[in-house]
Length: 334
Image (cartoon, rainbow, N blue to C red; front, side, top):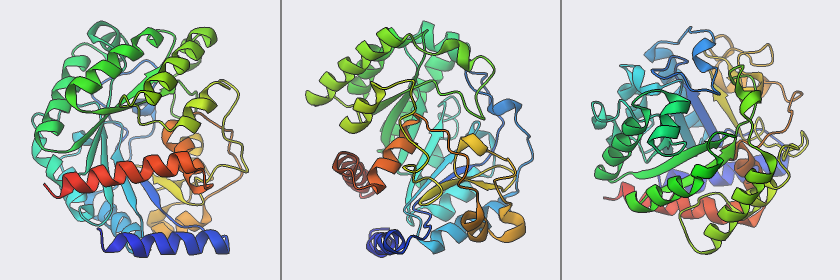
């Protein structure tokens, strides 16, 4: 991967100068199926058609050959796919590989961790609160899954979705991250194409949310493991007014997603819509080049905002990205 990275970065910079698309960061949504029913997530209700392993391998190889720097595997719950190991192994060492999971299945499938650089595990508060939002036993599964990632020497990141039911749980998630040697990021509930019908009803209270953002800004200054950039945290003070405008969002130009059925889209807003062409029919890079750029509504989704800020030349996200990459490469040497 280290030998490929300078070449891919050069291709990314060339694409920026020439105004061309480049798949720097690609998310592989390998399934909509999930073993939990979270309060704000509508993934399990989406169409369940899934590409087989060979079709996914075609997508993986197409984007890696094009120079993808970071490839994330997610769902639904990606560990429900029994062939996930084949997909992770195909990408291993050729890009920065992340696995987004609820953690419940990691203890029994911990062998897959050898193929990833970082595990991103959802954590929305203490046991009572987390389980109330995600289901009985979800908290224990998240913590045990995180422990397996740490044992495997992998970078662990806890991801907290902030709603009106858990705004006061941010200190707990931060403390647990410190105790486990993990990092954490925080983003507010964002109603979009993959939200459940309940998402709009559990948006965080604005006053409490902004107090929490101030708490996170102070924690960041003290060196606590908040991986959100300072510019992202500052943007949260504008919530719920969208932080990314259509003209500023770089997803679609320098990133995108492949859905379980093989469509290629810029983000969850137009997931599996007519704006997302089929990679199976056109080829995955051709579908990436053709996907729509007309329907950005703006959002506060942490990875989207940080990627857009990074590729806009914002130094804060650039520093965070370099720090995360250095930590991941260091772990890969172990």
